[in-house]
Structure formats: C-alpha cells, structure tokens
Figure: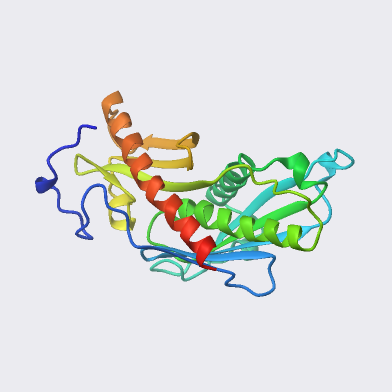
Length: 248
C-alpha cells in the first residue's frame, strides 16, 4: 500500500491517516425493540433498532421468504442548524431514500431470506448527532441490532437456526488535502477531493462501494489506496462488533 508520508499530514482531529475515530457500541439500548444498538463513530451518534413483523411486503407474500429493510432519518438538531422533519414536508428527500436503501441492501446481503421465514425485520436508524459517516455507522450498528433480533427469535422458538450468514460493517475513506485517509469526520468530508463509503464483510469481501470525485478525476492507484484503508478499518470494526456482542 503506497501512502504519502504521514509526517506531512495534519488532520483536524490529530489522527493519523489510517486511524479510526473512537468507536463504541451499546447493545440492547432500547428495551421494547427486539434488537437495538446505540453506535458512536466519534461525534456521530446513531440509534439502531430492529423490529420484527410477522408479515412480509406484498411482493413476497406466500413466497416462504422473509425480508430485511431499513428506514433512516436525522433528528432536527443532529447538525449545527435545525433541519425540518421530513414528515412535516410530506416526503423523504432523495438522500434519505438513497441511504436507507443502501442500509437495507447491505443487511440483506448477509441474511438467508428463506431461513428467516415469512417475516420482516425493519432496521430503523435515527441519527442523534451527525459528524460525518452516518450511513456507515448505521450499517455497522444495524448489523448488531439485527443480530439481537434474530437471537430473540431463536430463543422464543420462532427460528430453528440463525439466518444471518455473515458479518458486515462499513467505513468511509477519502482523499483529503491530497492524502488518502480513513474514517472522515465532517470537517474532512465537507472538503474532501474524493469521498468513498465501503461496506465490507468479515472475510473482506466487498458488498458495496460508493465513490465520487468532488473536483477532478483521480487515478486508479488512489482507488487501491482507499480500498486498502477500508480493509484496515473494517477489520478493526469487525472485532469491536464481536466484542460488543460477547460482552453483552
């Protein structure tokens, strides 16, 4: 992995180019949900809950398959200025729809929908405080919430086996001031030359990559750097997820 000399890089947070923000998971944060996790990526805080419904969308009725989907939203003062609730405007923004579809796709990639049975699990991701990386935190915390919901279904004998067939998490990477860096906070994300979100499994398979240049085209070599950083970051996050599950 070829990275520019780290001694020339001064990130706003003081982190090195390959250093994650402090990541914390608090499982079972909500008592009423079948599964939940409060996740912190630095100053980005997201509450993820998993709710089980004994029905599926119309397009899956009588299919003997289940469904995993997601909803995403930001509280009005999760950012520096108040943003009006989307419900009051009567529709969700394009950004919201895109993010919740990403979360749903990511979580379905590691679930055997036939083994889940004809039921639906909805992952709600509510951003309490935003400082960059809300979608990556949502996916990562969503996997923990989903795991607890499935565990409960097994405990009450509604499932015979675990339909979760893999572990995933997500992290952002980007090119900021010419350097490839891991886990961007808002100050970096808002001024990055290239912004990327990676969803990766515990065996380092890629589920999804979202990448865009905010200014000029960039070289293939930079894409490789960002992918290598994402592998480093998600490998650490995977361990933290497992610690959170084992500790609770």
